[in-house]
Image (cartoon, rainbow, N blue to C red; front, side):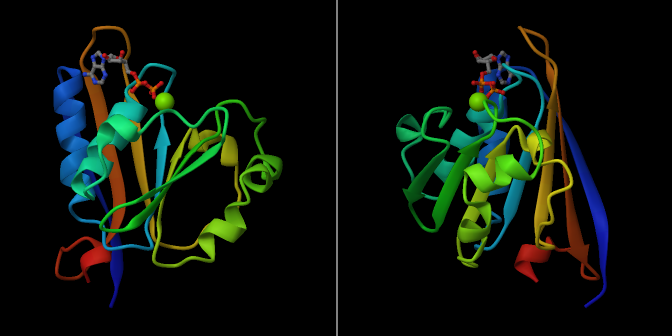
Length: 159
Ligand code: ADP
Ligand code: MG
């Protein structure tokens, strides 16, 4: 079925709203999605990921920034790999450092990547959702989600 890009945009006024948006996005996941999170330090990427995991039945309190381990796996309604590339240099080496190809081989898992900027132009499968968060401190956050939707207007993952 033909697909076209779709963009959603929200304003989040506090951490709870960011968490709830992550939860709403998480409810649409069926496995095989790659979620690329971009935005500066303190934007709210990890809080958004906690919202996603809560939608998969994973306790958000278990979700910590995987800065030191690089990849944290969580088993809920779906297997989710949480990756944080903050400490890595940009380019293919970042993808290799987390064995991204190995993770992508599991086509039913969900992969969530913080600091996805660091991937550079690393080739990815088509089912990519791009989530950009801007703003910091106590300012409201602007959160955009881009994904491919099919002709029925549904998220690709539902089609
Ligand atoms: P990142 O993973 O992007 O570095 P975190 O999710 O770890 O960011 O932290 C975001 C910080 O910003 C938290 O301390 C949170 O309390 C604060 N914050 C303030 N307003 C918001 C908001 N609207 N959404 C998300 N976080 C917010
Ligand atoms: Mg983080």
